[in-house]
Length: 62
Image (cartoon, rainbow, N blue to C red):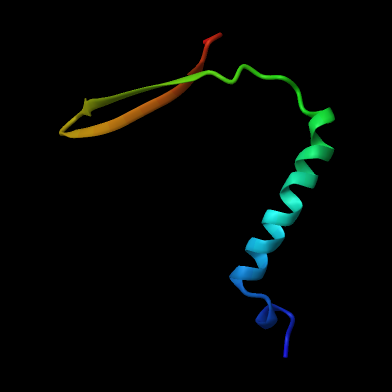
C-alpha cells in the first residue's frame, strides 16, 4: 500500500486547518505592507465580429 492511497481529502483539510495559523504567524514578520484596496474594471469590447470580456485590477495608486 502506498502512502498516497492512505491520505484522503479529510486528512489534508485537517492539516490545512491545523498548520495555516502557524504558517501565517511565522510569515507575518517577513511580509511587506501593501495597499489592501483594489478596484476591478470590467468591460466588453467588440473586436472584429466577436465581443471579448476584459478586466483589470487596480490598486489606489493606479
